[in-house]
Picture 1: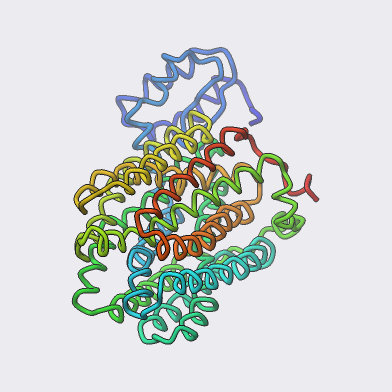
Picture 2 (picture 1 turned 90 degrees about the horizontal axis):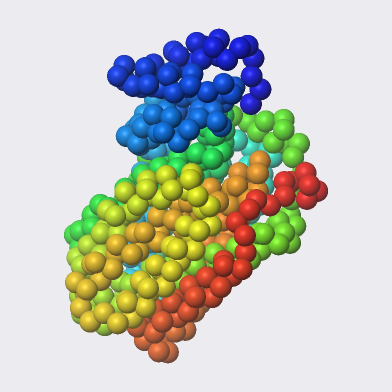
Length: 473
């Protein structure tokens, strides 16, 4: 950042911003620490403190006290209306997914009567459609249409799709609904987080702090999962699958209203519109991108198989209840909330790739343990491992991919989501085959093997950023 004026004048101009962000008792030490160095300071957008490269470690601790390091990001999110809207949208989107995802395999195999292999094929068709539709729409959102329009389209499609799931029981009809309506709706998550990253950039948040803020956004998504599955299990017991999917459809309408009222129409900037389109093939040809992309495909294969398998394992192998399924799915998000903040904070201080590798090791232990459980209650403490794993791979990993493709938040987020979708597609097929042929315990053995393969790829690759779109073009 360029500096104007002398060092004392710069400190004087920055004093008001320091006083606005820190209590009076902290202002003196902060200004004293900033004045203690002869080097020109630089400004962090969040927090608004003065930090010089030559400030000692003790002075740095004075500049950003530990408690302020925690409170200032929260204060920044709550003061910025654009950020609070993203937080609220994450809560609603999280509720939608927490109502649907844990019970989708039960819906297909029990309510509709599909065999596991048929259900795997059904989920594969809808996932492939989601990949194709979302990839096209993601490019359009980066170059032609605002994020707001894409979010509105996704919310409408979701409302129509889940209303269709509430009433249709014909497999062909469900495939059409899942492939078209919910295929369009599937882009909502990536568009929301692309909007979030652009909001951070517009607000002047340093890129080094982006993992923390992206994890905070993702934390509110996880917040919905602390109550969503248990509430959905109660609703399923009282109102059946029709009530469950109609509630999901209603929540999509709530998201629609939230986006329509509070997210402004911001057309793509001239720079964004003029940015050359980089095909997915060109992105994946980069040596620092492809191995990570494949590794995350394996991770999400395991995640998808576990999500589809867990409720069936509890009901059919461990002889548990639907209420216990809801409790199990609600426990992990309780721990995800503090983990997401903590790991987001760590990601600002260390290489996020190290965090991701450690998280996948925890996932390997988690899946291996699930293959050995003998009662539903034994799964409860294991959900702590699941929470730590998810907090990194679905929080820090988003900004990790965005940093690997600088200046391309839409393409980067879609690359991450495509790894998720491809992994889900393969996971659905493998889940159906393994579950029907070898049983539900064997599914978790395969999940552990997939995580082991993913780790090998991750340890062979650096975590540094890839080339920009201009360089690729």
